[in-house]
Image 1 (cartoon, one colour):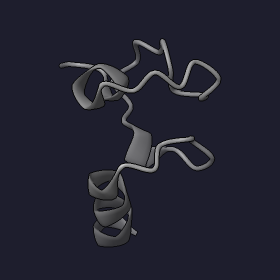
Image 2: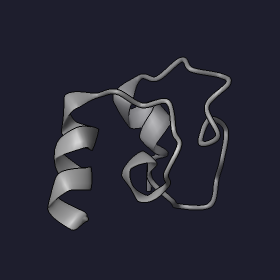
Image 3: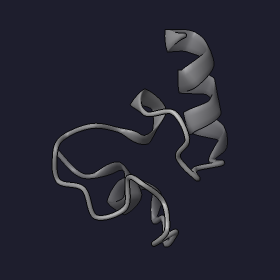
Image 4: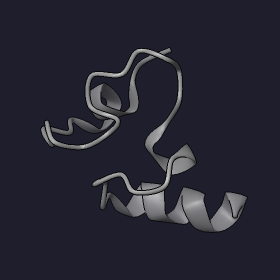
Length: 47
């Protein structure tokens, strides 16, 4: 599975998700720096 930062083209190197290889996604972890609209929708849907 592709990492969320690769899929979204994220360059936020200071994000807690950047560089992780553990199959978690940005929308599953609080405090990430992702502000992609799709991530916000997923967070709302799965909250």
